[in-house]
Picture 1 (cartoon, rainbow, N blue to C red):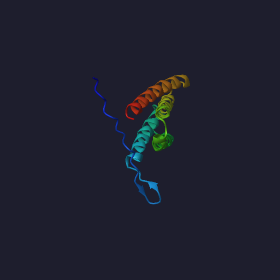
Picture 2: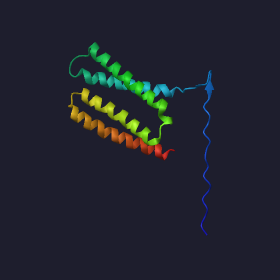
Picture 3: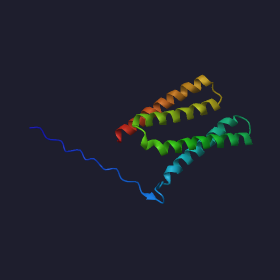
Picture 4: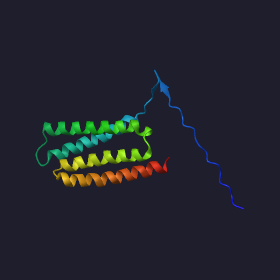
Length: 138
């Protein structure tokens, strides 16, 4: 006689702790990770924009704006990711990563075609990896 499988145990979703007027309490990592990613992205974008010339204020402003936009997009995606199905969530992470890498590749002086190809390849890899991670952890 075959052995019976144990019944699946489903965890009830925990209610989110609320503070004040129904606001959801945020953890430090919800803004610290996008801020760190934005800072690294800003430094690298400013470095690539500089090229062989000395650093000037235009390079610093370009890096800061690039890092702020990237950090804000990471924060926004982190805020809405729980409401997205895993397929769309993986595609969103892939699109964000592919666009970010393609933009940096273009800033380094490469052509638009090669930047698009690099962005598509990296985005497909990130999207597939993110989908696999979400699929196996749900």
